[in-house]
Length: 223
Image 1 (spheres, rainbow, N blue to C red):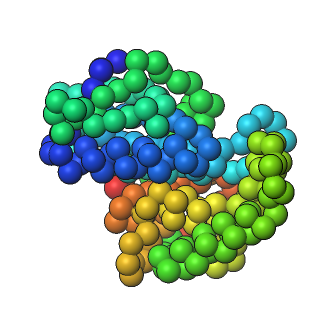
Image 2: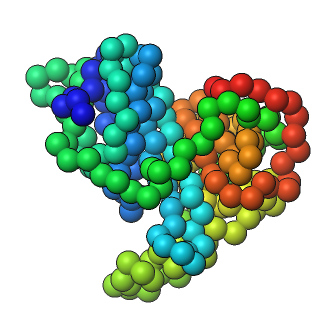
């Protein structure tokens, strides 16, 4: 396990630290770091079930950044512990301890994606804001973690017709991780039980039944 990540420039390192900080506020304070061939994929769980019977969908956020071509790693660390190296603004210092969250044990495919109808970014943003407000209204004051998780699952798990019957949680992930910026149509792709919603700033992946409202357009390779 490397002790730090060397990026192409200081802006990329700051970008990675910002993404990790946003991820740490979602409740799953962990980020998977997969680096090879000069690209670092940072993956976090915006939503993830805990145990059997938990209806919370698995919704992952992913951002790719350029790193040192010689860097090779696949590790999960505490997201809030990632920090820019005081001695080198183009690097992040990694915490010494690795994590093993259940969601990191499942990975979306790299190929075989089929394009489907896109989703307007403004729709994602509006749905996310409405969901955040709904969670805030339903969570009692001083509620425990179990109550909060139950409310979040009730709000974010149901399929939304305006999102191609994908869980409302995809809007939450795109919004909370800073993927929505200005006018844009998010591209949607499917591969087996996985659906990927791709915006310019990052990707949201959800694992579950195929969404009936998504019309397949064409086959495409990895992006």
